[in-house]
Image (cartoon, rainbow, N blue to C red):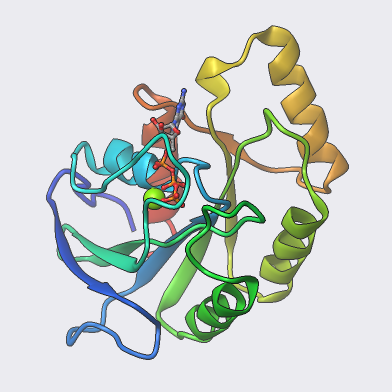
Length: 189
Ligand SMILES: Nc1nc2c(ncn2[C@@H]2O[C@H](COP(=O)(O)OP(=O)(O)OP(=O)(O)O)[C@@H](O)[C@H]2O)c(=O)[nH]1
Ligand SMILES: [Mg+2]
């Protein structure tokens, strides 16, 4: 449904697992991806806010953070995964977190962020396929495209295709791209 005011948003709560949830049940959309890919930054861009904390250092977001958008749905920021020593969660606890999250009937869509300035690793591919099998709508977003030159952009798009991702959006920290992302998210609420 459209006419959701993404500016009318606030931070609700943080949870350390999907076993707990806010008192009020609303539709949820969850941002996921490798540590440092830009999840928290995209939350701020979409909500025109500084509600989420982003950092140059990977591993900033340590909990599942719930943002209430226009009292209509929850936008969820999650800790990233990754093989670097910075990631907060072990592979096992990350997998458990995702498994619990994906089971939620009120989870309406997953937003997967990919930073394709680097190659897609085996762990990324496994994660993408896992999300595709979940049956939940998957919105793929290439981040940091604004920092790429033309050559890097075409390489990023080629990498996405090679990974079997035919439909995706490209984010910017500011700009029109975010309006399109808002529309797509709103269409699942
Ligand atoms: N140029 C550019 N930089 C970005 C973009 N998105 C995020 N960044 C930068 O990337 C770094 C990591 O961003 P975060 O939003 O903290 O990443 P995250 O995915 O939340 O990371 P974790 O919380 O560690 O999982 C920060 O320095 C951001 O400023 C983007 O679209 N373009
Ligand atoms: Mg974060």
